[in-house]
Length: 125
Image 1 (tube, one colour):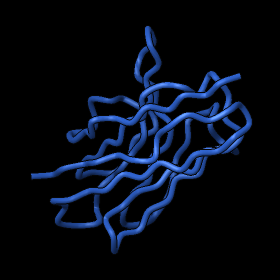
Image 2 (cartoon, rainbow, N blue to C red):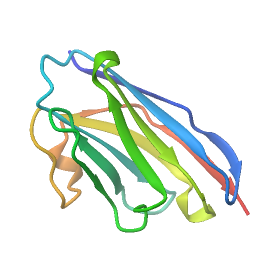
Image 3 (cartoon, one colour):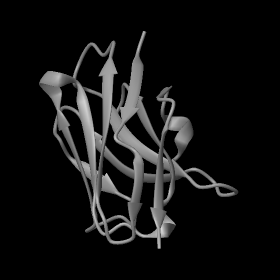
Image 4 (cartoon, rainbow, N blue to C red):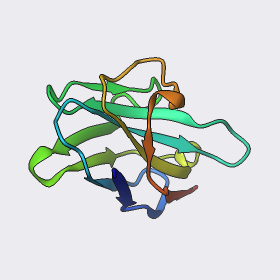
C-alpha cells in the first residue's frame, strides 16, 4: 500500500518562503513520478511541479518556474517543494501525488494513482 504524507504548510506573508515535504512509503522502485498539485477555493486542481524518481528530471507549471524548486531524497523516500517569493495567488491546499510511471507534462491529475491528504498554504498580502 502506497501512502503519501505532506507536511510543511502554513501561513506566510507575501514574498516569503515555505518548504513542503512529502514522505512516501510503499514504493518498490525509483521508476515513479511524484508531483505537487494545488487547489484554491473555487478553482480547479493545478499542477505545480513533478519529478521522476529514477532520473531526477523535473517539470514545472508555468507560473511556478523560477520560484519553486522540486527535489527528492530517494534514500528517505521524500520529496520536497521549496517555494520562494510567494504571493496570495499561490495560496491553497497543496497535494502530493505519485504514480508508478513517467511524469507527464499535461498535468492531468488522473495520471496519478496515489494522493496525500493535502497541506494548507496561506499567503497574506
